[in-house]
Image (cartoon, rainbow, N blue to C red; front, side):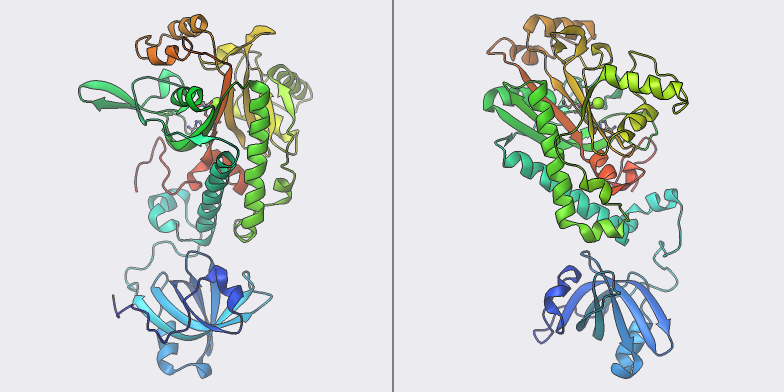
Length: 450
Ligand code: 4AD
Ligand code: MG
């Protein structure tokens, strides 16, 4: 550090860029970094950032001491600085305020011969991902992370205020939940264990103990696919309800999503603006959401194909691919709930539809604008015998699932739950074309650095 950074008592009050509105006409102190510097003759325009936003400072040569002018003039991108200045309202400023700089204290000056690698010009995505630890500082990335935090907060708030008890499942597990092809093995004292793919099986147990529960934590899938929607490590929030079926589950999903979107709109207008999100597309997201069956969706896809709107003819019985989901969701102005898929393409634990056992009592929520599946859920098999048969048919180990089968032996009830991937929700709400920007440090097939 170049100077002692302790703030003197005589300094104007410390505040943040997001709170400048409460200090109009006053001198304040900000702790932050130099984002950019423009020069125009005897005027300097440093832009500061402090984690809550950015603000442009004005430094006229005639208004400050030569020392302050020269210090600002010599600032390099991302040098850390403590700035004091007077807050002035300015309608043209993105945040509504500018700062008439009075004093600048340099905490650490970035060396000229080793500048901040991410300049304000365009960089390729590989370069940016390689420098993710620094890329996070740019206004757009910071705005996305603030919205992510709000989505996580609102999601928990919804369950916390609607009678759900948070119960945390283990991350180290002895068996698969979502198919054996995407398991991450871990050596566990001589045995093979796996990183969890979903907390579901465990929160079925806590739901039968507590009624309504949820879990929230990291989940893992050894996904060999390089798509815009897949991470190998992602965060899932999962509610589970005893004495509930598919209809209650769909009602929960639409109210839950509506709450999250409303919170983001209410609290993050400035961030949505920074990332250029068209918010009219979010304002329509209110329960109830449209509900269509898998069969309705297939009919929609077949019609689209016959009209030349979709290239490939969808094969009845398959799971939807990305172009199929995009087409289906583009027909609606809010998320659409697709229910009752063929049991064959879905997980072993899904309850068959009593009206036709070929179909599962399940639902996928597809986000609008082609963002694809954000929620997957179902009613769970309640019968001991059927569940046992399913486990065997799927080639899973009965021994590893004995505890799960017990839940069907001692007071089995209809129960249902879903999982929402936070990163998919962030990608949709922020309008991002790839999930790698939705999490501080994305883990994908090709990347585990930084
Ligand atoms: O549809 P999935 O596989 O469902 C489950 O895991 C259930 N056990 C959840 C439950 O019923 N409690 O995953 C749920 C959601 C998906 O809709 C998607 O949002 C997200 O998790 N997801 C992923 N997100 C990012 N990368 C991946 N590889 C993901 N796989 C699933
Ligand atoms: Mg799914």
